[in-house]
Image (cartoon, rainbow, N blue to C red; front, side, top):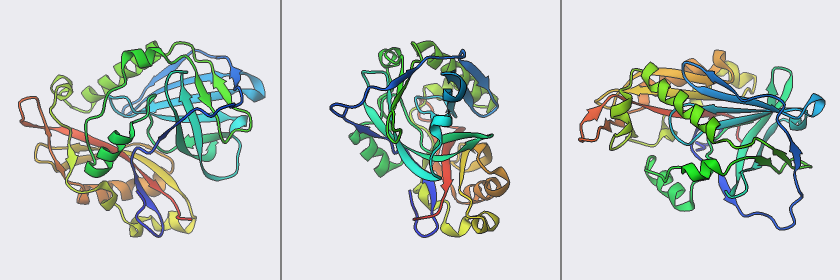
Length: 298
């Protein structure tokens, strides 16, 4: 959510479901040229696969930062070369689920052009009602993605702003989603969370005020400001039974030397929560995860 002036955002879900356009161009299909690779990190899980070959190859990266249905994607390859700045890509998982428009930044991973998506998505986007409740409350239960919906995904379509839409022919992805579920469940154990008690909780940790108030325009690190350097920081706060953060962890960061310390310092001072409750209504240690996007307002 933009706070005005030099933009500092605490990113919330913002993907938008779209109807299928009549007469849309048939996407160019790319077959996989590598197996799925699952990477187990300390604070996130990653799926990687390459589609196509040579100069036409596209690498799909799926990052997941906690158990659940939300994840972040990046696309890398010559097809992703585009002017610097932000845009929205039209994405569709399988043929039965709605299209969605997802914000990304043009950039690079190593020497390769890349689209780096800055919002979490699901294979089935949230409904308008779910998004309205989340916007009003900051946290609310949403309908989980079903096993049938996961089983329906055997391709990923990428449309605008590509001149020629493409279809990544993933094949059935149910097993890949299951591998990510196993990885993210294991994350909780590494974080010192009672996974069984946490899974049956009545509620998660809820911010006592909007996360958009935790960081202000004046918090933009001066060195990054002078360079007009944008940044995206994925963070996790350990939240005690009293609702006070006990630790801040950076899960991923585009420019760690410039933004990480600022994010953790401000969040530890300003973020407060109604604690998570177990199935019996008793407070339990938990966590809160989100992302901060530093950018310049147009």
